[in-house]
Amino acid sequence: MRRIHLLAALLAVAVFSSLPALAQAARPAWEDCNAHGGNTLTQHYSISELNYALAHMPANVQEYSDCYNVIQAQLAKQLGLPAPASRQHGHTPAASGSGGGSGGGSGGSTVLIAAIAVVALAGIGLALWASTRRRGGGPPSDDEASSDGPHDGISPPGPADAPPAA
View 1 (cartoon, helix red, strand yellow):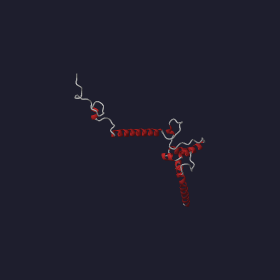
View 2 (cartoon, helix red, strand yellow):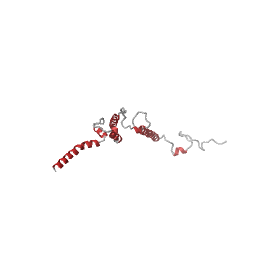
View 3 (cartoon, rainbow, N blue to C red):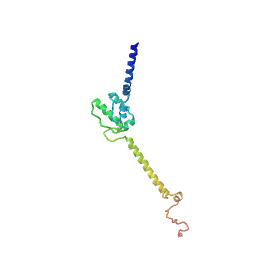
View 4 (cartoon, one colour):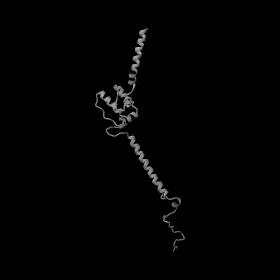
C-alpha cells in the first residue's frame, strides 16, 4: 500500500512540474514575441509552430510590432535559408499584387485619398456657387428671365415711343 502512495505522489509531482512546460508549448510564438517587446523570441519553436504563428498572428500584433519579421527570420534560420528582407508594418505579401514595387499599404489607401480629394473639390465648388448666389450673381430670376433684351436699366422702346409709320 505504501508503494502505491509513493507512486501516486511521484506521478503527481511529474504531472504538476510539467504543466508550465505544456502551457509554454501551447503558447504561440507571436505571443512570446509580443510579450517581450515585439523584437525577440525567448523560447525555441519548431518549424510548424513558427508557421502556425505567422498564419494566425492577430492584425494588431502584425501592425504594431516587428514580430512577423522576427518569426520569419527565425523560421528561415531553422530552414537554413537566407534571412528574408524585412517587410514594412501592415504590408502583407498578399496585398502587394504582382510584386516588384516598393512602398507600404495597399491600393485601398490610394482609392481613399482620391475619394477624399473628390469630396473636397465638390465642397469647394458648392461653397463658391453658394457665395455667388448670395451676392446676387446667380442665374436670373423668373421676372428677369421673361423679359427680352439687355438688363441695363433702360426699357426697350414700346409702341408709344415708336416713330410714326410712313
